[in-house]
Image (cartoon, helix red, strand yellow):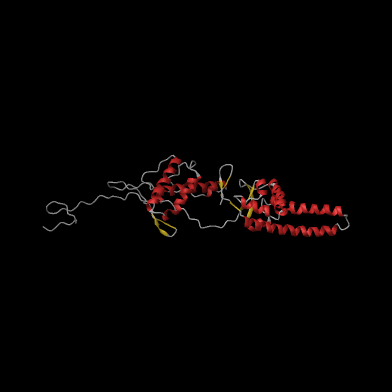
Length: 322
């Protein structure tokens, strides 16, 4: 699938239509247009039976231009690139930047269509579509348009696993504006497939991606946070911001629930401070539990060992009888 990039360097997820689907859409449109033309020609022939030959020829040419040329142009202009055949095949004509077409685009496509479709019985259109990397005919090339698929088969998408609960909301102040889209895509692909990787490969990829992400955000990865858990938490933060932005644009920002609060560290008496809650294992796509990583286990002070009668510590904890 070829990517469409706008003038603002935004990649659009549009799939160009190929020759079979376009040929079927054109065939449907031709059947409809030719049927209307034949019916109209019969009506005009009956209505102009009393006129001379020159007038009848002029009316026939006008009917040809009106139905076979003006008809498709008017339909594509009014429907923004969706004729009856394209609607049936799930296709649409758009500009090169992904925007809707206007009258000038439909006029160029329709005028060239008379030559490369009607004049050559579709041979020129088929050859140009096969040669073009995005399946464009000459009318699309001159008009700056592209036929894309509106109905794409929904494939099985893998969900990004949620981050550990103790990292939710921790990166709320992180600046994510400098992270490129390619890095986001790489992180998402890694998170959805990391349970399929070897342990060493999984660890090295997580370290590299987390280092790249930290370099673009300007904030290093917090100490004690596993790389995979860091990636999942940052992706979750970006998704949360996107949802809030869309909801606010739709006027539903007040209906959003308040952000989750991270629990304060809980200090447990002992040689090492321990923070809670601990990370949990997250089931992922029916595979074995995927463990991002864990914090240091709590080390509690050992109870004094019982001593033997000689004053030496016992390895079993029991003192032998005197």
